[in-house]
Length: 345
Image 1 (cartoon, rainbow, N blue to C red):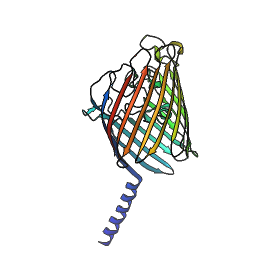
Image 2: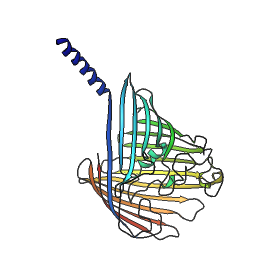
Image 3: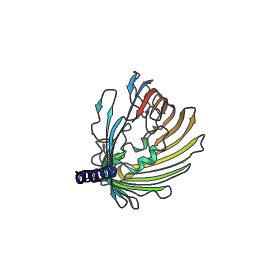
Image 4: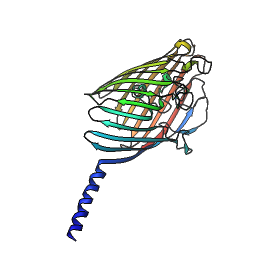
C-alpha cells in the first residue's frame, strides 16, 4: 500500500512538471462602435466611405486567438499562435479563417526565434506602432502606404486595396533576433511557391525607456512586370518606412515617413508622412494624428486629421470617441464619427 502511494506521488510530481513546461492561452478582443459619416467622396481610412447611414461596426478588428508555449529545456522553446478574425455586428467570419495569424515557431533565448506560417510583414510593425490609433477606427492613419503594394505574393487573398492594405504574407519564413538592450531586428520572406513571386522584408527597432526608433524595407521579387491591373505591383516594387517617438510622460510625439516605388519599371513613387501624439488625460488617453499621402504623378493628394479619446473603465475595457477629417484633391471632404466600446480578454 505504501509503495502504491509513493508511486502515485512520484507520478503526480512528474505530471506537475510536465504541465509547468507547457501552456495554452485563449485571448481575444470584441469591439463595436456606432458610426456616422457625412457622405463625402474623399478617401478616409476606416470610415464609412460615401455612406451617410448610421452604422454599427468595429474599430479594432475583433478576434479570437490561441497561443501556446512548450519549454524544451536548455533555453529552447516551441510556440504556436492561431488567430481568427470576425465582425461582431453580424457574426460573420473572415474569408481566411485564421486571418490574423497562423504560425509555429522555435525560440532560443540566446539565438532568437524562427517562425513559419501566415504573419505580419516586418514593415507593418514600424507603421502600426507609429499610428496613435493603431490602424483602428475612423480616425486612424492606417496602412495607406501599403495599398496596392504586394498582391503579387501568393496567399495574400487577392490584390490589397486602400481599405485593405497588404500587411501580411502567407507561406512566410521569418526570424527575430533576441532583445539586445532594446535593439531587435526581424527578417521574413513570403514565398510565392511558384505562382506569382515572393515578398521579402527586414526591420530594425530600438525601444528603451522613452525612445523608439524603427526602420524597415520590403521588396517584391518575381511579381508581374506589366499589365494594367497589376502595374502597381510589378517585379522589384519596394517600400521603406521610418519612425521615431519620444515619450515625455505628459505627451508622446511620433514622426513617421514611408516611400514606395511601384508600377512598371518602378516608375511611380508614393510618399506618406505622418505626425501624431498621445497624452494621458484623467482616466484616459488623448490621441491626435495628421497624415499626408502623395501619389507621384497623380493629382489626388490626400490629407487626414484624426482626433480621439479613450476612457478606461478597467485594464481590459474602454469606451472611446473618435473623429476623422479627410480631404482629397478633386473630391469632397469626408468626415466620420465613432462612439464605441472595446473589451479584451
